[in-house]
Amino acid sequence: MSCAGHANRPSPFELPADAARALLVEAAATLTERIYNPATMTVATLDRGMIEAMLPAAPPRQGGGATRLRAILFDEFLPLVRDYRHPLHLGHQRPGPSFASLYADLAAATFNPTVTMFEGGPYSVAVEGRVLSWMKQLAGFPENAVATLVNGGAEANLTALLVARDHALSKGHGLENLRLLVGEHAHYTLARSRHILGLTPAALVTLPACDDLTMDISALLSQVASITTAGQTVMAIVANAGSTANGAFDDLNAIADIAQDCGAWLHVDAAHGGAALLSQHLRHNLAGLARADSTVINPHKLFFVSAPCSVLLCNRRAEFAASLAIGLEAASYVIPDPAARHATEDGDEPLRWTIACTRFFAAFRLYAAISTYGIDGLAVRIEHACDLARFLHDHLAGEHDFETLSVPAFNMVCFRYHPRETPAHDLDDLNRHLRAQLAAGPEAYLTGCMARGAYWLRAQIMSEHVDRDSLMALPPLLRAQAASLS
Image (tube, rainbow, N blue to C red):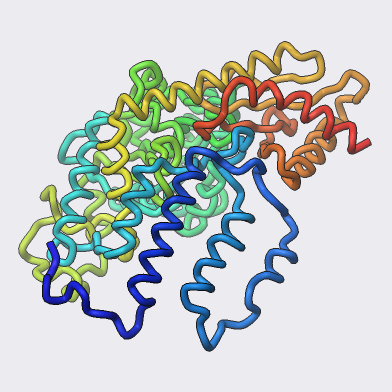
């Protein structure tokens, strides 16, 4: 809907309409082409000084108009951006987003609608609510569970543990006696959450992993017994569903049983692995997820939408409302009539359910992606990535100078280059240097991780352009890179 009387009104502050239209048409054609045909290099340079030399040292007093804007895209951004769609970009858990995500982002960015309260953004708040309802259905959470969009897994984990802490304190447990149990390969931001929440350094208890990097259930049982015997309280247990190290899925049902027996809050970090819910062939990895008190799923990973787009679900609505309600009495300028709704109602103002006040309309990109490709269409893409991870694992395991950490549980493969002449004590340094050299060049990109006391290269299949031929090129490329190190 538009106002005909304003259709041709020029803006005194904007670029001329013809120039803006021309820029958008050219950019749309170029960016669409890059979705289907990624760059031939993963990255042009890691020379930060060279990049910074291209950028104005001080903010310009006089703008360069359409010419300068075009140069930013075509002369700076496109030549220098690391291309996540490259067939050997095997780096981070961050995809090149789908076209549907890009399309929705363009519209959302044009109008910048609020998702804070319904009156200010009726369509955006309604769409966010519907998308969150879909996420509850996928996860097996009840319709009256809390669901909120946040800016990432770190914020989601912090929010969930805030509620868990407040719940423990409300039952009379002392802050100094609270313990937070996490796996050896839990996300690093959980240590930050412990600090932010005012828990003691001793509160964070790290449990060892099994050979496949899942949480050791016997160690969890032993630690819970030790904590209870010492008169302390297990505030929360954090399980992994798609760990950042190798994509491992903890035994959620076994951990839920233990959490229930000791009265602990169970939070499942499914930021990455939550996408397995989309696939009938992969969702068994998340058996028991619906028993969690809270969980996080990041669609900006394997739902193939742009970041940030993170969903926090919580089965404890009253406890969640109690923690997040603090300060809202002063928010009448945002929530027009605070008394009009109760915090136990679905469809309540989104501001009540998130630490952040200002957020992007990220639900729109997820709504567009699911509507465009369907759950089954997204599932096929995820399954393809997981199939390729298993192919890469098997291919590397068959090579005489490579070794793998474990059979992939999802879309990640951990491995290392191990030529026969290299002693075991030198392998960590060799693979670290190999990764750093590869990252600085244009041909491929890998990250790394520590597991079982050793350093491993880590390949994460995210791009739709990865195929078997590109993966088979990885071992000879790594050998050539290693030869150049000596």
